[in-house]
Length: 240
Image (cartoon, rainbow, N blue to C red; front, side, top):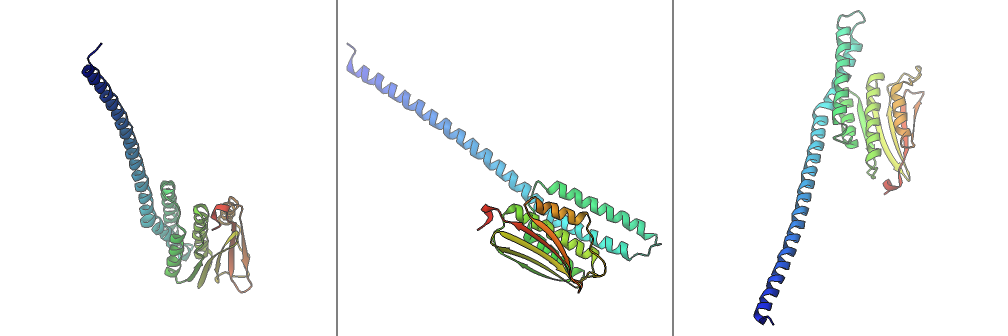
């Protein structure tokens, strides 16, 4: 019969071995979780860096290119028909438009369009052109997708105001009632004797609204006020 102290030593060694194996398993699991957390932290940091890059590019470049496009188009319209400057200005306008499109393509995957930013840009660029701008926007939560669509609509509507009217006042209103968000962009600079155009710009806005089950319409008042009205239903998750 083995000596009892030897049995105790063997049992203790076995217990220590088991504890050591268990400790190694726990350590391995913790190291694995740490690697996962580190990888997630790196991924998150990279995503934040991409988003920051997109915001920087948009804030520093895109808005200025947009303004440069509008100013170039104004210079083109003001130049005499037989002026040698017109072909050169046409090339400048086209080049800036292409640069703007390239910037949008680069930053599209990096950032969401900011409705607040577009409203601020609209007010600034209209006032720079001598057009007073009044903005009224609800503070209701709209959701990322709807906010992005409304931001693009504001941008394109203001572009049309500057290109196709001689407005002294432009109003931008966003109202949320119940399950519907309504955007109205109005200006007082349209000739009521000229029927409003129905080009690709308006078609693009209608397509964007339709993607969210919304509609876009226009109204031309006899007093020269032109209104673009977009109505988009809010999704269930956005009705807060």
